[in-house]
Image 1 (cartoon, rainbow, N blue to C red):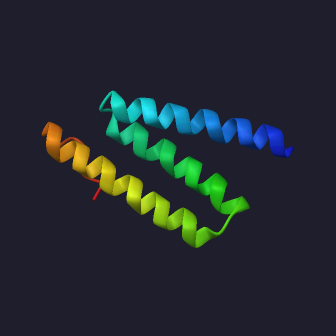
Image 2: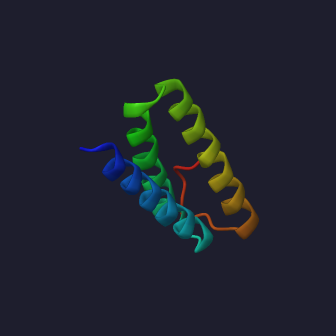
Length: 76
């Protein structure tokens, strides 16, 4: 896959994950962020991608705690 296509897919998936998080669809947001991090891990350092994924999971867990949404148990 050409670099520009991979970059476009990465940006679009990141955008969709952010929108899912804002709409409080935390399960979808987590799945999309995992896809982003797997794509990044193939290109960049896997340790960085893992740390970033953990950060995003903590953010989603914090959002879930603030909103009182207990539907997503996998985040945190």
